[in-house]
Image 1: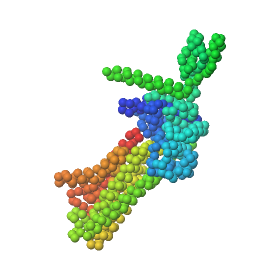
Image 2 (image 1 turned 60 degrees about the vertical axis):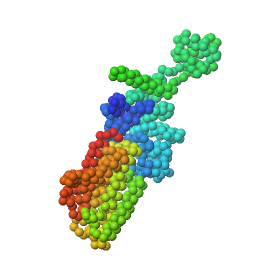
Image 3 (image 1 turned 90 degrees about the horizontal axis):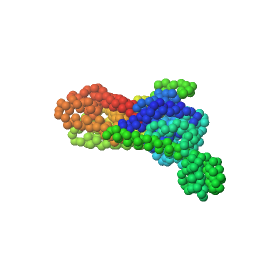
Image 4 (image 1 turned 90 degrees about the vertical axis):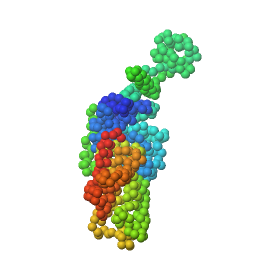
Length: 309
Length: 271
């Protein structure tokens, strides 16, 4: 369980994280989404005690990270897979990290096996691809068999196999009751992995919701219609109170459902070649949310500059 | 907010001693697992002993006795004072700056959030390694230089009073320099800057004092590492400077000061 209470982080004039409060619960993969620069990494660094928040508190398992004794046994994290010393062998890197928290060599061998790195364990890390470094970072995070996992962009640099591996691993850990917070700027990846989403933009919380509810809540459900007599049909539908716009050689209709549209067409003997109710993609719902935050900030800036005049 | 607590059923809290052992094992594993560390030490040892041999040979074959101010004992440490002190200080600097430049420092601070503990462990490991290296090379240089000089009856032996202490002190000088370097590196974070600061602390401050007018030269100079080091390894300490024991305190004060400042900085700075 991870809890943030009104966490704010300012770097000089810039507010990277702004009064952020949320709770990450066990048993779920929680996606932590936002455009680049939204404050995801800063938030994770605050949770891990690397950066001190300007105000507010971040708790892991009810405690500040710095207060946890042998923290790797409680929280596993991967912030930056390239943050390793290239001259050290993978095994030695993991062994050093393990020893720091009183974890033995057997477990080091286990996580190497789990990450599929046993064969290259004695090689120096500088020969590793980014994907192998990601696996090494995840192996390090799993060393202490922690109940809480925090991964920053773990699929970056991974090939299709690696991406699937992380997805399965996260799902498995979540179903075992682990708490997993996984950041990404890719909605498409999170749509497949996360069952809960926390979305931030410009350091502010935009959404904290189950993944499927995000799409349902969006106002963008519409029906796509293709017809040889499109303009006629559009006029009829508009007369019934629908909103009709041209879309990709057909019509995008909001305000009427698909059966009603089909009935109207049938009554006027208008052929319909395609009739498709559309859920907004998660991607679209995400863009709607983060787009709003950008607009908001732009407006904010304008009023600031006016005030300074 | 139920079940928010970390399960108390896991192993009981380890003792402070066990945790200290863990963190020292962490730092020691990091130090010993990089091959370039050994190569650097090996080159330092070979160059130091090789240069010492050349110096000793030159002194031994000179028609007159050694130049003024250069005792037979001090001659043992001419090469050591640079060819050992510089590479080992750079190694000490890298223990922090390589972690800052790669980002590994965040892994370190996430594994051990108590940053004073990280600093103390690095100091213990680097200090011990430097002390062992220093004593081994100090005695090796002494033995070899005196062997060459004794042929001309210009040498000193470990049986003479003050000599064993001086050689031991020469070994400790390396430890003092390495720990000062470690503290400066934690504060500065960048390799080039930290090496420059270390060389300034070890040599440059003393070098500048040499240009000061007479009373000031010694009054200020005696608090520098280089002047203090020359006092603790001298058979006949200079009168204007601090006594060998007081000079030893100066050699302890530099690393202690650097490490305390480092601890204050890293425990209050975002990593």
